[in-house]
Image 1 (cartoon, each protein chain N blue to C red):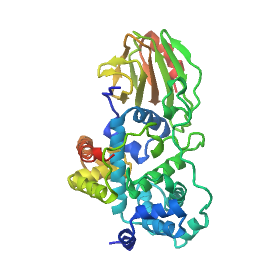
Image 2 (tube, each protein chain N blue to C red; image 1 turned 135 degrees about the vertical axis):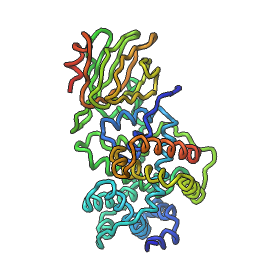
Image 3 (spheres, one colour; image 1 turned 120 degrees about the vertical axis):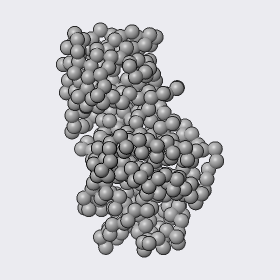
Image 4 (cartoon, chains in turn brown, red; image 1 turned 180 degrees about the vertical axis):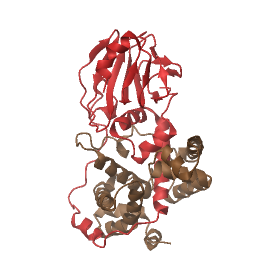
Length: 189
Length: 213
């Protein structure tokens, strides 16, 4: 569907991250930039960033990925989920007017000092399958509400207005969808 | 720690997407640092975020974007891992609060002390800690906006149940409540308050000047 998919199929993104971590491979960086740049920009613009701000945040996200490649833990998250959290954190920082408390809410920081590990670590392909399957088991309406509420960060009142459904329906769909995702994905996390 | 009250799904979703302001995000982060179940939910959402990112329609990036990024690559040593580890728990302050400046405790009424948390916020929001002695009855009050609380120690009760260590109380402007601190140890909590509080009664009048935004 997208030209980027060739990269997606050609390389496991986790190998690209590993190539950066182990040997500072700029070609791997370029491949990850191609793979995620346009998608991140699409996500950021849907969650309210201007095109320019989104492009800046894409730069920042990929540069952070370069610097933190060694911290990527394939046992815990897909590269896409990791990239998503880096971009989210970059956006949080951007919204702060003050530098003092930057980074406090970050993904790796919302972690107890002894992180609980899943009993069995799935490989990334298996985990992707599970996430896809979990989303497939939600109704289209539930996926739409999860996407708007969580992925695009929109308020429930706003979602109700744009879908033309009552606020209570938005809340109950999200609640059911999240309970489902917790059930289906809880052991992965 | 048995936690029975958690942030709503809407709140966890907003936090996981980065849409919460810093003040409210801080109370949620504090709860997450104490609640394995909500960390699980957050992780599940992040995996979903990754899957959604894979599916999204890309927006075209400028032709020189990759080259610009590559010009900035640093080939020096890798960045040190940043985690909360370092600082030992001073005062038993949960980790997310540690980067913030905490004001002195000040008595604001019988059995109640208040301590401001310096969170930069452009909005009509205030963050503070409260320490209330066992048996204290906090004045009945209504909110003009959200009032989110995370308990660290001790417990209080009101119409909606008992709130002990780790519990998250997410009250909005429709709630009018009258918390009572349980017997035993003082109750210490972190509160983010939006839009001020309307207190009733004599203690309310006493608290008002302090907690007023």
